[in-house]
Image (cartoon, rainbow, N blue to C red):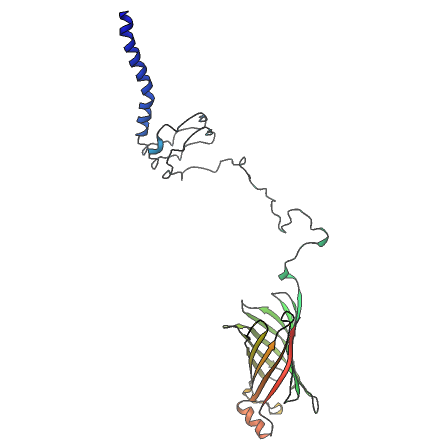
Length: 345
């Protein structure tokens, strides 16, 4: 009986020490300093971590900032059962790890095949009876715009200005004409018609180059010009004509649309004409010859494609051209009430 009395306390102390040993180990690892640990030479490729439970190891206080994992081979490691939720990876340096040989083919999505996207975006699917689609900007189109077709009551004449075009947004062929038709006496027609190549120069400006014919002096010319939108939405154009006799004509124009509401629009417009040398046979002098101004009140209808208008126009001769017309007893300025229509399709 004395033997049992001495043995029971000894057995109790031994059991208590065995129970406390895991706790002591965990406490010892939580206070470990991993800052200077060098794991570069470790080969963990054959280790099985599937049953490792690291949740109780107290790794939340571990310092991983100085751990060198650049030489570790973890390609064959199985981490499926590892619980590392308590670890702080914020300062881990993994810049030296080599991911070049990592096989991610089993991940969701995988690697796209080389022919995943065809150049025409069809992905091998036929277009059917409608054929291959074409971008709208690459299709050749055409248009007609009549900016002015009206009658001047005081001058008894019809004024017109129109242009037609065919092509794309980047290249077009343009036919443009402007002039006046007398409705009394000899029914004289004065017009300036040009056939040109049109191309955008920038976002707001387009360039033109071609040939022209002037019926007023019965001469042909080479034409070059620029047209577009100036600041404050002022439609501006400038065209130069080099005639066969060496005469140079410069036409400048500016127009602004003052919209009163969705239909009513006031359009003021000014034009200026200049020549490089005198031509008395055609009543032309060197410098600025003519100035014209026009104000129209338009009403847009039919999706703004048709707009009848009424307005007032004014024309006058400038400089030496004014003196020349006075000497020949010709009117050097005039004003008139106008009415007409503008449209496009």
